[in-house]
Amino acid sequence: MKEYIELQTQFCSKIDIKKICTFDYETITEGTAPLYHKSPRFILVKKGKGKIAADRNEYELKEGVLFSILPWECTQILDIEEPLSFEIVKYNYDVVADTLKSSSSINDNVSILKKLEETSYAYLQGDIKKEVEYLFGRIQEEVGVESVMDFRERRSYQEMNIIMQLSSLIITFCRTIMEQKAPACVKSKAFDNRMLIFRYIYMHLSEKMTLERLSKQFYLSKNSVRIYIYEKTGLAFPELVNEMRIVKTIHYLLYTDLTLEEIAAILGYVDAAHISKVFSYRMENKISDYRKTYQKVLSIADIEEKKLAFQLVEYISKNFREEIQVFDVAEKFGISIEEMNKHLIMQVENNFYDFLNRLRIDHACELLLCTDMPITDIAIESGYNTVKTFRRNFIQRRHLLPNEFRLSHAKLIN
Image 1 (cartoon, rainbow, N blue to C red):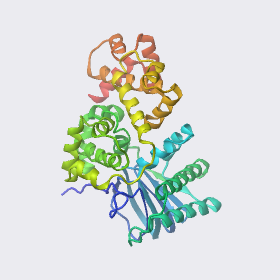
Image 2 (cartoon, one colour):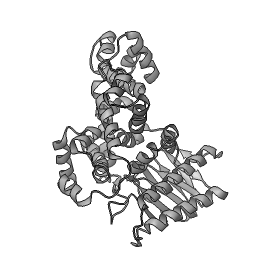
Image 3 (cartoon, rainbow, N blue to C red):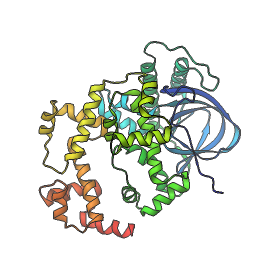
Image 4 (cartoon, helix red, strand yellow):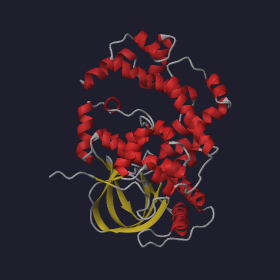
């Protein structure tokens, strides 16, 4: 019988699902089976030697290594030379990412999140090592130790203090990987970009997610994507997408006052009825009862500002094929162009024009591959007034002319 890769729980804590962060210890004496992590974490190696495989790379684990694992990353402990002892900090990615994005230095913080995706490995020495150990200690002081149920009494401003420590930890990690000179990866497997499919889906849940989109993104047939997902998880593609959406749905239920209709629009559900049906099936609990039981555990950012950002994204997503202008949209929502771009960067990591062109070119790609429409008609259907403007923007995003894209991808998928 085939054994599928284990899918870990989406919560930081098995005891208190409201927690945005937990601290724990772990000792490993032998290799482990592969595991997909729904909740991200940092692992600080205190002693021992071994290797860890993360997606397509292998890394050396030893004292002083800080290892980052992102949502839906697959890891496996290999080749234990000496028993490995870790300190582990698990955290709610969405809450921390939202806080980083909403700080004043928007460009820096978007790049921090992207830098976090570049590598999992940082080797700490000297003052940097002491700083990370200090941050781990501060987090432990706030949350206690999960496995022995050593829970600390909640203090005022606890959640915000934890997020500040986590943000400092992420910044220190990113600075370290930028400065480290030795190669982090000890062995790179043959490149298999299929391993990134799961994280790609998770990071783009707010957009329309289909097998067609994944086949184009990863240069695979739809059937190949479908089979790979099932072979790794035992889940059909729609089941996997719903599994991921549930994680983010819980985040919005716990930490915001958004309506079900608003959450549905953000996460790609059809409507509030759809989100309720999926939630009840997966969680065996009515969504209204769940929110009543657990909400509201903390307030991370201003609710009305978040709603405005989501409404901006929804409006542009529904009207990108029309002749919408940046000043008209800003005026419609009663904000300045600078404020609008700040909200958009927080939500989709693009300013108005970049987001508009992303939507238009993605739509054009669908038409190029799924229809026989002429290039001129596709340009107009996608919101461009001239073929020249369409081609210029298409080359910037896809690095091919539209007709070249149609020919090369059609052959690949067929």
